[in-house]
Length: 316
Image (cartoon, rainbow, N blue to C red):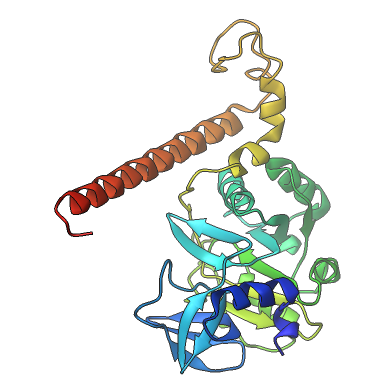
């Protein structure tokens, strides 16, 4: 069963280095407890070092408790919190209704790339638009990643999604409420496991059907994490922004001045070539990432000062 959930020799070596217990994978997280791949729900040891376990983590369990978390290979983080760990593919889902939002897609794409995770974009509810293939191409251009369109109503495009989900590889669904993530999970599982809700007619906005993150093993052996809807996840800073806006970065290299702000300088290669809304979105994410980096730097400095004071007072 461990193998079916992605266990491999490298994980076995990591566990041996910890010498902390038997291996298990976290499929759901509750307050102070986690559900493991074998169906057990166990408490997290109070003396656990580092961050608490996230869905997708491999852990060492001993004596009915989680004793340690194995080092993560990848993780999707929001505002300093691990949303899901050890993911191979982030599936960013957006719907073809009025809730379609390019800047939100850019933000989620950057979040996935910050975590070192492969990215796939899915345009759900494709039956609501006249040309779903064209809309998927537009979505791909927004985030610079592969995109496909599908309709859960008639199953169109579902086979293409299945082809991207491989046995023992973990994919995580990301998107706002109402885009159809839980519906996709049910279709891929072949049974109604996740609760779904209709979107509000007045504004096409979704309501939270999924209230917690959970990892499922699909009939074909692929692993899939369903997550609650996210609106505008705050980025922690990383390479994801540059990768998502690679087209802008390439143009910026042609500007006359290396410190060009793309705001009226002569010889700017970006200003006239990039949609102003896309450029504004990039600037907003860059400011946010800078704030996150400054916040982490202040936190590290405060921690160093705290340790220095403890040492001076003989409390270390």
